[in-house]
Length: 335
Image (cartoon, rainbow, N blue to C red; front, side, top):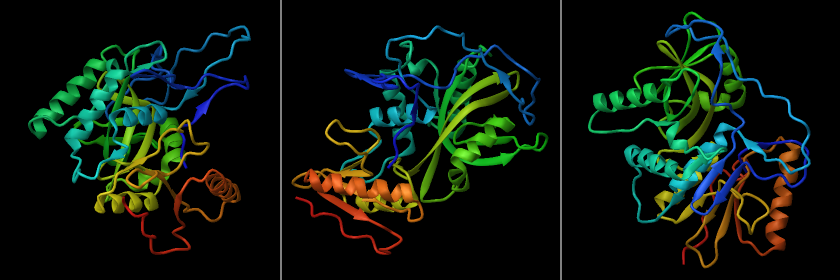
């Protein structure tokens, strides 16, 4: 039931943060990718407390409809969608790390930022090439190149292998990404915000049945790489994004049964609500819904509205409430 968060003012009919124009996706980020200066000096284990971003200039109110903006996770979802990592075909048996990251790299060629800058010019995806030593070398070189100007950020995408507290600055965190042999440092304010937003995912780092992926805005300061904004997502081992451990079980079972399905990341024009999954190998597509929360009144109201909408519009819906039904129901029959 996740949709990438967008923000904007109260103006009606705002343009969406993520716009699809032919084969190209254009994204307006909340996050700034430039800054004016650091406030402090930094070492590998002593990330800066804060940087000084360029302050926005005050503008006169405009009567034209504005455009919403999305968090960095929204950009990640756009990349995953373009790379089709949210889709699964029954003939697939495995989706290797190398192939998945290369698919993201290729997808980035058709994704642009607000002023039409190709996101590929900012992006560092931790890639596998030849062997471990060579992979680490090319990924570090790419990060150094993208952050050569200390006022401009790289956008780094990779799988988190470990997270540790700074030994020198209380509240700061260091992240180790797969195939990158330098840490990314989260200063205290960034670390606090990240833990508030993604605390559960930090706790799942290293679990063998899933991956925790990060997308981070990273600046360089002399010898260190410092994060100014970060987003985390959970996927199963095949890089299918999932919003919960229950969804992970559903995705894994669909793969084991060789079903054709997709994880919904954006609203379809024909649907009012975002389903958890869509099953494509039946006579008509089925929506698959996982209702894993029981103690949230707002969630329950949304659940009932969603199910009523499906009934009224004749949309076949498979559902699982894991707290009530310990055993997952069988999926609709393949045709």
